[in-house]
Amino acid sequence: MEIVVIGAGAWGTALAGHAVRVGHAVTLWARNPGRGRAPNGIRLTGEMPACAATTLVAVPMQSLRSVLGLKLPAAPLLLCCKGVEHDTLMLPLEVAESVRPGHPASVLTGPNFAAEIAAGLPAAAVVAGGDATLRADLIRLLGTQAFRLYGQEDAVGAQLGGAAKNVVAIAAGAVIGAGLGENARAALVTRGLAEIGRLAVALGGRAETVAGLSGLGDLVLTCTGPASRNFSFGLALGRCQDVAPLLAPGAPTVEGVATAPALVAKAGDVDMPICRAVADLLAGRLTLAHAIAAVLARKMRDE
Image 1: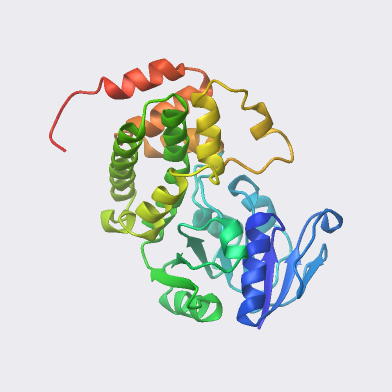
Image 2: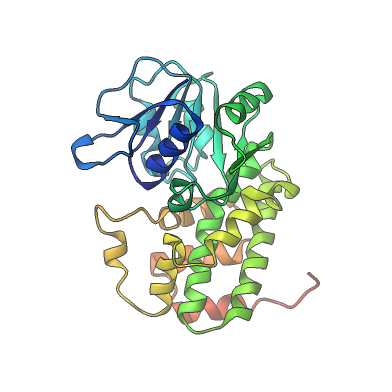
């Protein structure tokens, strides 16, 4: 099959390499192909192919709308990004529907570091969307024993898990950077999962979705190691280091920075103390010490 991958960053390149290993012909599209380097067997180009079996869109969330406005192949879309659009508060599939109404689309989410997918190491992910036939087709197209894909009809819950975990990961990094210890990180991750579940239910998703790969799985991965850009950003915050280089043009995108205020705005009255503290910290409304104090000072209650 002909597979088109939009976005030649680490994630897009990793997915393109995976598709080649599966046995597909792969075109990797980049705005500036001269800057990129594609693995063997992948065609790197700045020209959009006319047709494909499916198009994987692997760009930062805040770039999704502009990319979907391009003349893409007339093929189902698999959106490989996580977050909330800053201006509209839309999730990836909502952005796709607003730009390309009625076009078949699903989202790929779950606990996946690009470098490990690129190396062919074992992993699992979720293909989420309301069309069961499309989910099954995409799983057959891209799933392998080493890259296990699971279908999920609760696209809202799956997308919110993928978005919110980046915000909680910033908090987890800050906890470790500030020297608060592993007990504090474990508590924060667990309570972060609880608030993601509340948000999912409030916005029409299911709490059990957040207990799966697109929620708990992704949260554990992102909150526990320096390979996570969001965790590393939080770590620098906690250590009172200069975070400007992490946000400089050309640096890998720290999705949680843009997602935090958008997620809090989308949440409305939903109780999300960790995500709100991160948003306030990033906006300069709270210092790190005050953000920590605000979370710790919450009223004691049953879990």
